[in-house]
Amino acid sequence: MLSRHHLLRTHRDVQRSRQPRIQAVRHRVPSSPRVEIVFVDPALWLRGGNIYEQRLDKAWSLTDCISLAVMKERGISDALTADHHFVQAGYRALLVEGSG
Image 1 (tube, rainbow, N blue to C red):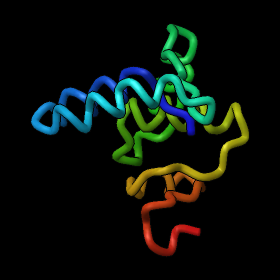
Image 2 (tube, rainbow, N blue to C red):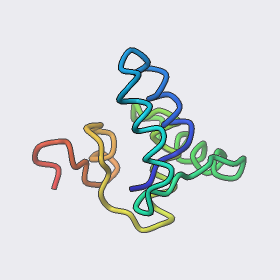
Image 3 (cartoon, rainbow, N blue to C red):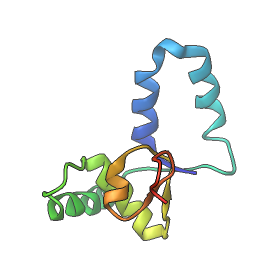
Image 4 (cartoon, one colour):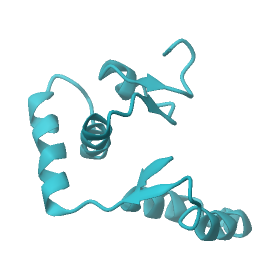
């Protein structure tokens, strides 16, 4: 699994009411050998911004576009998401029925 650090932080903030479960995820996810957390540096931010600017016809967020940049660079075709924007971009959204 691949995730961006600010996405994990956002998810954690939204889920504060589920504190015990969040504590478990917060400690297990970063230490799992099956998970890599990608930090958004200025270069990745710009690559995501370029995708965003190229696809103004879509309602994609900058967060989506940063994810798309990482997926393209790493040859990742499946996203663990229910966000249909990934399907629009040509990827499989594993939590969307019929995206594969």
